[in-house]
Amino acid sequence: MSTVTYPIMGDESFTFRATGMSCVVPDAASSTDDGRKGHEIFHGVDFSIGGGEIVDLVGPSGSGKSSLLTAFARLNPHASGTLMLEGRDSGEFTPQQWRRAVAYLPQKPILPGDTVADAIRVPWTLAVRGDAERTRGPARFFRTNERRARELLPDSRIRETLDAMGCADINLSRPPHDLSGGQAARVSLARTLLTEPTVLLADEVDAGLDDENAEKVADIMAQAASGGMAIVRIRHRPPDGRAHRIATLADGRLTMRIVGDDSVKETV
Amino acid sequence: MTGNSYNIDVWGLLVALAMVAVAAGISELMRISIGKTLLWSACRALLQLCAMGFVVGYVIRANNVWLVLAVIAVMLVAAVQITLSRAKGVPKGLAGPVLLSLTITMLLMISLVTELVVRPHPWYAPQLVVPLTGMLLGNTVSALAVGLSRFYESMDERRDEIDTMLALGASAWEAARPSIVSSIRLGLLPTTATLASCGIVTIPGMMAGQVIAGGDPINAAKYQFVVFAAIAALTLVADTLIMTMVYRTCFTADDQFRPASER
Image (cartoon, rainbow over the protein chains, first blue to last red):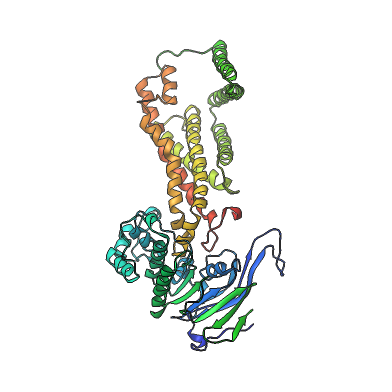
């Protein structure tokens, strides 16, 4: 099994590393080579990414790109493998701490709440971003943390971020379901970027957007990467020149190509 | 009991059955085709109620603590079975949590209402404990069945939202919370509606029964209020307990959403 090394950064400087990732979806009709019941999506996939890097993940539909990203975020119940973040094994994190650092951004923007501001503040209502002196006892189960979320992320900060992302037209007090597809995608992206994850796993967030909006989204992500965020993008559009490497997932295998280099390296 | 009570003889029961039969006959003529079910249910109800009457009568006469506990145990088991058969779309293996939450609320009911409010002698007074348990269970069973059905339905509807919440770092509880809240609200709806309408629109069954049997209406009202208050509070307790016990069935050990087909 060969590990892809990215020549610019040394092995040890990888922010995020996944080894031996496999995914078997339960299915009574078929079985894998090692006799487990189910349909194997990928097997023994290795992947790593450094801070500030953008990697595009491409491949035919149904090849398991989304399954791979959800596996990276520990959201995929059918996946297994070893995950490391900044030298620490994923077992040292609670699932919530892990997902706070390794953020999966789903393709479909889901914006719960009455206003755009509420939808963006959802992550700050969660315990994982809470302060130490939280309510103890059963009350914590039913307490909503909207007030705290408002303190942690004031409207002015959201406004600034949206303006910087070319979303000056989005009013914070609007109901989220009034947004257009492109606006909703950008709001959803803004929400995850504001949480400042170490690794961003963006699952086709520019799907269904026109070229202009897709370009805006790509710009926003490139800007985040320049600030040190590691970004994996699933894309179906032609390369936009922002990715440093392109990973192709096909037939359960991941191949890696460095942009501007014709050699293709493979992980099993 | 003070005052007079008026007994119903066999002819009275027959008149009541005849009323149902006539109504059923009319519905058949109108081709509503509910007559058969109606008549059949009425006969079943008559038999069940008479049987209940005999059992309760026997238990009261025997005045034995073990017999009272045995009757309550049978009612609990039946309540679990009815809850699970009425709740739709729930995974298997919920009998334990349902039994536990019903048992806890039932014990609370007996210890608070019976021993703190009414204080009968002996403490297990069957004429009090058995009907109270029955009324409590009747209410919690429907609240639990509605609450459980709604919870799983809501979790499946909110699948995308839950996945997003989890991706943003939500714990299983945080992701499930909106579904838990909506199912508890729905389960409690009939209870709060009854509380609000009683005394204005309806004379509740228990109070009506006491008044017809010749009891003092004020006394009956007091009893009715205590029972309603206890039922409302304990239904909320039962629903909350069951939700905290079952919400994890929708998640894996690693706080990932578990779809309906894999629960």
